[in-house]
Length: 148
Image (cartoon, rainbow, N blue to C red):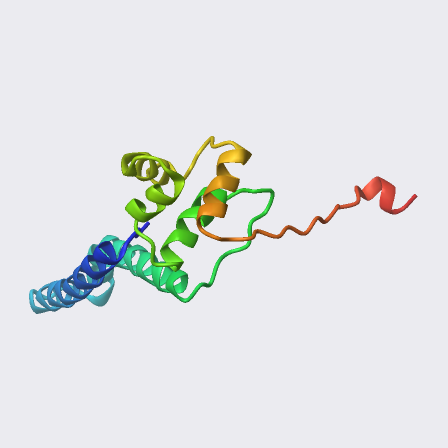
């Protein structure tokens, strides 16, 4: 996951370089006489990496536009907390200052995507980010009760 502008710029540059490298590699393989199928088999792993990297860049760009994924049963809460910080253009240092903790604590929490944090801690992070999180509760009716 791209966590700041510096990583984003680096990722965009790397993505462009990878695209050029992939095109050159394809051209070299064609030049030595490989068929389209053979070229595809050789370049598929590179293409897969490129696609994954491209998705990370697109994900960061969505966050900057404040477009967030929905949470279901709080799965992905850690990712959302990181996303909210990024969307607001806050550095880990600035968030740490707001939380009155050391920057290394925020870095460690984000590296682990806030795994295992308490609800109280999540609320403190949301408050520090000036975010109000709303929930919608939906109860799925078990099938045996639905037809009773």
